Length: 338
Image 1 (cartoon, rainbow, N blue to C red):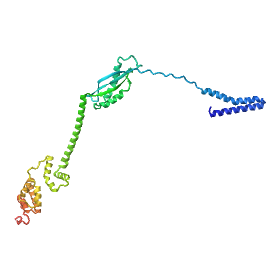
Image 2 (image 1 turned 135 degrees about the vertical axis):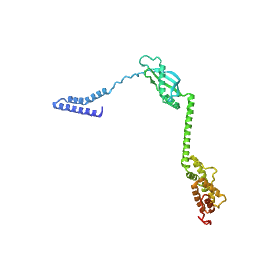
Image 3 (image 1 turned 135 degrees about the horizontal axis):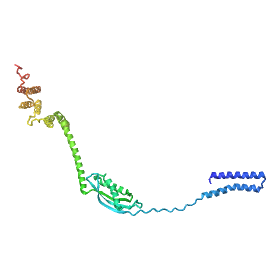
């Protein structure tokens, strides 16, 4: 009985007792009568409440439930599977499947019993294994083996509901010859990739030299100077002939004759130093090889002017005499156009 219930019983008892007192005094009842009624009114509700609450509070103890024993699963049978071929993702390569297949006949199997439940169980396992193997590349057989052990280790029923089957100790492998072939193919692919990268690098170098470095003798000379930042200019001048030959060869043009005189350095020498005997032969040979006809006369005239400006008047006059320019040098003593 909670607090609210006790308060309600008290109020009802007091009200009932007051009613008996009022009636006893009003009608002149004997004192023992109305006092007894007051006592019964006060004690009665409490007695009744305790009696009712005691009946309601008592609960019948339920009988102990007897646990229902689950029927024991049938003892599984084992069927070994070895060397069963399974198609891989590559049609030319097949895996070899091996493992232990466990199975039991379902007690509530519908219809007549299956004539070969072991074959039904093996077929269920191989069907699941074949689906996974068909999605597996031959190179990933080891990885697929772990997946097969995880998937096939869960018991499951066949579509007809006759057997429950699972597998363990599953092994998926390729024949030794196929494994060796795959290793060789992998090595060949790596070599081919490396070869292609080397070829691409070589093509880039050829393009760089043909279209940039050896585009012209000038670009070749600039490239040489960039590679020899500490080199002297005299060495750069000496390399011009070789660079001209390289440029011509790179573009399938006529390469200058190998026996052509290297007249650049002799001109540099006799321009800077004193005139040496025999230098005119180099100058004449250079002009004759570089130009013909009127161009040869014009080139001779310009070269004679260059020699004259550097103080080599005698050599300049020889060039004019050789290539048809009869203009005499100033101060030579000969009259111009007699």
